[in-house]
Image 1 (tube, rainbow, N blue to C red):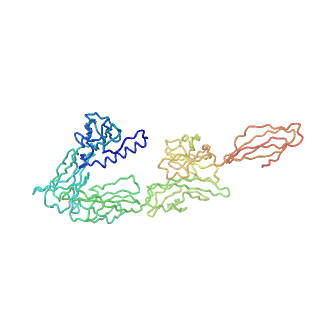
Image 2 (image 1 turned 180 degrees about the vertical axis):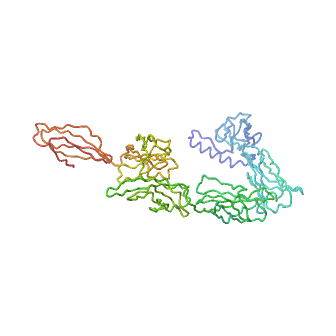
Image 3 (image 1 turned 120 degrees about the vertical axis):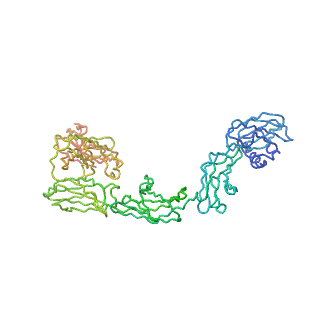
Length: 618
């Protein structure tokens, strides 16, 4: 049967259309039996050893034409649209060897070219390289909800239609039942009415495809041996805060059989914490409840429980649905990081003490912080200075006298943290020496110092604090405690543990800072040494502006002109000098225009002249 006639000088696009139409038509005309053998075509494509073969095999392909109305010029073989040369046997047949065939879903088309220019399809064949099935492994069967469910691992992919069947043989009667699965499935469910609870069964999996079959290892069991119980359901979780924190879990179970239990938990707020399995010797069971001694205050916990029948002891139930509950608060742990500054008030003899503190780390709060308590001790009694809100982090106290020490605590509904002590009184202890401050790339400042000289008691550590020099309120920005062996600090750089405190405290560009270093002793803080440091110049935050000043200069005078710039940090050096003198030929005052650019600085234009001249801006 002729499908297409060859027309001379076809374009490439039309040739592709012809090829596509030929392929589709060929598939419509060639009917396959069982998806394997070609049984009706205008010829034959013979594939040996078979259309289904082991991956990597050598394949013999023979085209035989039975077309009577074609004087055959040559045979053409196409595999996935690529032409392959064939060796002619005789007038009606040609042959080709395909070596090491590995490509999946290969379709071959055989054509004949007639002397008169016609192209005829001989036939089509689909090659199916694949593998025989592996032996199924890890066969597992469980009995639950009046049915038996079996699963297994099939092994490597075969690339062929592979079928699995579960074989069940009764040891008592020898009767065998076969339960086939869906194509390539690795599980099967057997209804309970096919099985007897008192019987012993041998069970295995048979895998089959066109290249072979394989059988799993056999299992032998009774249904009682493979029972998987339903998961218990947690109904309540209690936290008892006695001398030792205790957790009590209550549950409900669907079985009356004697069981053993496993419990696991995790803290929800930390996704990096994995499940913790409670050791069997760490909890006690009382009926349908269990208690163990462990929990962290003010954390959301997720609990799960599972059970195992003691008599069968083969399969644990699934883990129960999670039960989530939050532990109660407890008094805060840790000690606040506190610091202070003290300055006299000029209008009277009072002093202003500003007390600063940093919030506790989230792991130390153990509840919701309600506020901060500031007090001093007098004759063994606590004298409250101020109770601050939880949102506050400093307090300014004006007083005509100062106690030696002030204490600050954080409190929640359960109590206060350990008091942090601040030494406020005058100190005679030595300050650090040779304080050096310099800019250190980016918006960072490097601070370095030497330890105090000839100290009467050992230094325990250092505190570095800093504030903007232009801040009229002299607001302390931050402070950092360092161990005694550290004699330097890079400001503007925070460790990951400080990130929750670092917002708004970093060193900013184009700023001058007052930096102090204080040595800490057993008796309290010593004296401080201070210096100023500058951060790096930043980018312009507004566009430059142009200012023009007009000066009326007298005839014959000589003027020296230069400029300086002033910021909040002070006046800078003067610029280059410019000498100006009017010529003798000019008999009247001449206006002089000076233009310059500025970026948020004050510019001073200074003229040295025998007379004072007004400076008019326009």
